[in-house]
Amino acid sequence: MELFDALRKRRSVRSYTMQVPGNRIQVDLLNYLNNVPVLLPEADIAIELLSFEDLLDYFPNQGPQMIHAPLYLVFKGNLALYQLMNVGYYGQHASIWLTSKGLGSVWQSGFVLETLQEDEFVFEEDPLRSEELTGEESLLPIVLALGYPGKGKQATGKPKSKAKLQHLILTPGGKLPQNDLLSLMDAGRLAPSEYNAQPWRFFPVGNDMIHLFMKPSRLFRSPQRSYMQEAAIGCAIGNMEIMAALKGMEMEYGFMPQVPSYGKRSEKMHYMGTIRTQKVYKQMMFGFNPGNTNQYRPEDQFY
Image (tube, rainbow, N blue to C red; front, side):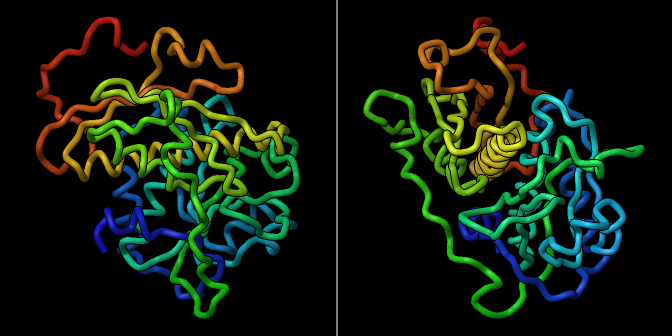
């Protein structure tokens, strides 16, 4: 399956055979992630694959209650600003790649699980206060279970209903742009989010720029829920990066020196960065052309 199809067909898999994906698949997955463009270099994380047995070393009490899968993609680092956005970004790249190879995945925490509900991220305890986060390297409170899907109706859930793009765009009347930005935002809206809250909002500007905003959920205001919404924004950016590369576009992500005008007018939205694109007329996987000498307007430069 091609990545374009995988991006649209990917769904949560909650039941797995215990056949461990071969070493070649594991190595190829990690190599793929190693070649994905860096999103936020200051939010440094390490990415590893752990077996269920290895995961129990981190979560001896809660681990047995997690969805049982042969492998877990885990992320290590210091829990800090935008760290979970990086996790969502790389995890979503992994999830789409796995789908293209016939494997499944599901986001979850490494903590006590509630009954699985609308979408991917599920946990009950406050991960920031968990004793299991102590040690030489902290395992961040979200993992991606992965493996070959099991059989039966419970293995793969139905795709969750997503809001229409015009309801997620902050331009007057939800006016859709008639350019390549449309396909990027449409890919972004398909990303997973905790309880399918879909916190992302898009503010397209011209033919080459999208400001990203997060609309916090009124239902979950605890700190750990905010972190999971950051992860969801990272997932959306991951989908947008894949779509940009498939359409032969360079995509750059960063923060404007000043919050875009819409963010200044709305106290209900949090500015989460800006995406800028440029057409290069060839399919890319992944990254930018270092020989590109085109310069953007000085007032558009990120800091």
